[in-house]
Each structure stands twice: as C-alpha cells, then as structure tokens.
Image (cartoon, rainbow, N blue to C red; front, side):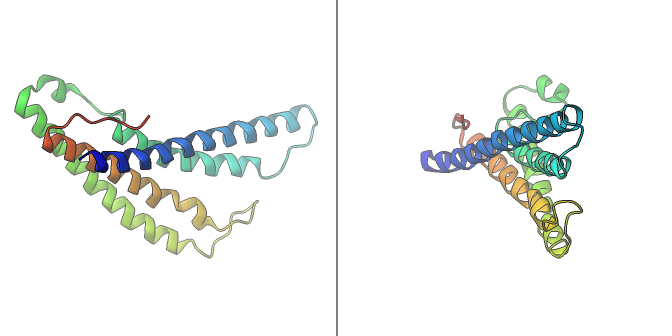
Length: 163
C-alpha cells in the first residue's frame, strides 16, 4: 500500500509543480502584455494566446490535484448528513463516478488531440493538439487521484496527499 501511495503522490506532485509553472507563465505573460500595451504603447503579439492556453492547461492539471485532495467543488449536504458505513459507501460511489467520467474524458480527449493534430493556432502557429493534450493529461491525473482515494477508502488506510 505504501508504494502505491508514493507513486500516486509523486504523479500528483508533478501535476502540482506543473500548475505552479503554468501560473507563473500566465502572470508573466499578462504582466508583459499590460506593460507593453499601456507603458510602451505597443503590445507584444502572442501573449494573450500563451496565457489562454496556459489557463486551459492549468484548469485540467489543477483538477487532478483537487481530485486527490477532495478539494474540488461539490455539494456536501448529503455527505455531511451521512455517518459510518453509509458515508463510506457514498465516498466509494463518488469515486467510482469520478473515475467513469474521467475515463470518458480521457478517451474523448485522445480523439480530440488526434482531430486537431493538423490545426495551427492563429498567432503562435503551434499545433493545437499541444493545447488539447491538456484534456487526456488532466483526465489521467483525475483517474490517479480518484483511484488512490478509492483504494484507500476500501482498504481503510489513511491517505497521505501529495504536498
């Protein structure tokens, strides 16, 4: 059980670091855009596209981190009312639903990447499949986080989340 949790935590830690890097790129690109537009009077081309694509990646990478930590948005009214075994079965049901949705997202994301392999972005002229690769990468991370939660819930182990 320890090795499984270590591997899952290492993967989610990579997602966390990637999210931090993406956030830094967004801040730098937006700051450069604002500075050059309003101070120098001539905006840098491509910074809007860079920040937009990094934001897409950040959303998918961040969702994987949130899934592992149970920090994603959810309505907890029913969960808060449940106790004992009912609460455990509810968590198991939620994890299974998240895994099913993430597998669908993974499969369709791969199809989307394949469909956009020849399409180029308007300003930077990079293949759009690089942008859409965020979908299967994020779905994979969601699956890892949900499977880790599910296994730990089923075995009764206390889960240590990636820091």
